[in-house]
Image (cartoon, rainbow, N blue to C red; front, side):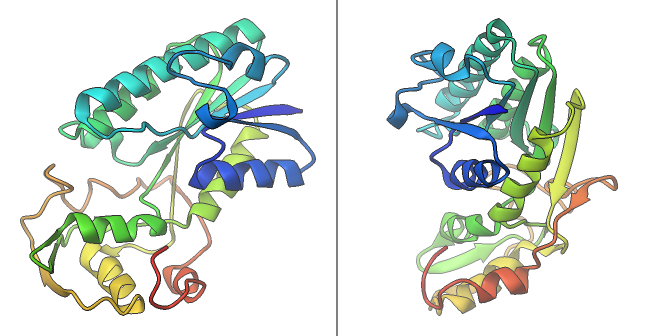
Length: 253
C-alpha cells in the first residue's frame, strides 16, 4: 500500500516513515525539502497519486499566531483537495489533546482549523490527538525561564514518547478510518513542574526551579483538565523513567 507522510522529515515524520516501511509499505516522505509544499500546493498532486492513505504530521515554519492559522488552514485544505482528487481512502491527522479547550492559544486555534478542514473535506479521516511529547520538555523549561529561573506551572500533564506516537499513527494509518477523534497519551499523569524538573535534573541543568500556580500554558490559562486526555484515551507504553534512562546525561532531547 502507498502511504504519503506530509511532514515526513520531522521528529514524528521520520519515525513514522521508518515504521511504515518496516511494515512493508511504500512510503513517500513529503516535505518542502523534498519538493512537496502543502501550502503552495507544489508537488502535492504527484506525491499523493496512487496513494491509499495520507498522514499529516506537518508543522508551520513560524509560530506567529496569524501565520500558524494560515499554515494549518491552507495546508489542510490543499492536502484534502489533492487527496480527494487522487481517490485517497483515508487521511490521518496528528493533532493535540486539549485543542478545543485552549482556543485562546494561536497555535491551538490553528490546529482546530486544521481539524475542521479535514473533517469537512469529504475524505474519510481520523484525527489523532496526542498529549505533549517528552521531547518537548526542554522547550517548556526554556519558555518558562526568566533571569535564569524556571517558573514552572503546576497543572497536570500526561506526556508521551514521540516513538510511541509514531507507532500509534502507524496502527491508525493501517486501520479503517473512524471519521472522528482518537486521543493518545503517556501512561503517567503529574504536574508540569515534576516532569520538567526531573528532566532538568537529568540534564544536570543548574537553573533554579520555582512553582508558579498561576502560570498558564505559554500565556494561555490552563488547569488540570486542559492538556490531559479523557477516559477513553489510548495509553501508550513508555514510562517517563524508561524514556529518561535512554537519554544521554547532560544533553537535551
